[in-house]
Length: 154
Image 1 (tube, rainbow, N blue to C red):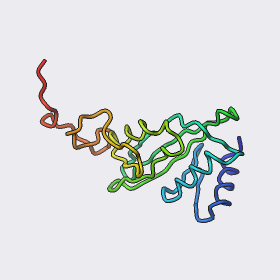
Image 2 (image 1 turned 90 degrees about the horizontal axis):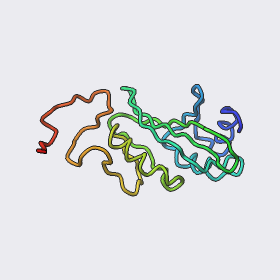
Image 3 (image 1 turned 180 degrees about the horizontal axis):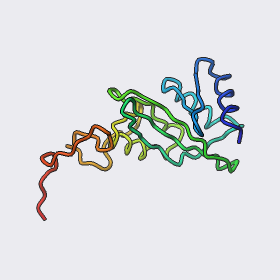
Image 4 (image 1 turned 60 degrees about the horizontal axis):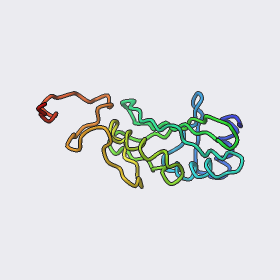
């Protein structure tokens, strides 16, 4: 697989207004260009990143971040870690389910636990917490309140 700097240059040569940065061992892609970059990484013959192994939501207090790990089964290469950041209030990131079906449940988990909304997701609803639960328990500002938990008798 190419180096991160080479991948960054390839993306920026196709999308001149996409300012991709290299941060450690990851690419950071602006959320406004994420769908185009995702399609590029999935379909470009040089990359063919055809397998999405994980989607993780992270709360850094100042912003929310989604981390994707991509592989090429065809070329036996990867992982490529891609990060997409969004603000805490809106928490919107485009869904990549059109390119990788494996994102469907994982985006639901990031929505449920961290509160990241994936625009265009085919079925964005809670997957771990109950429907009436109003919070996102993996956020740094979450405080557990016992009265929010429905009473169950066993």
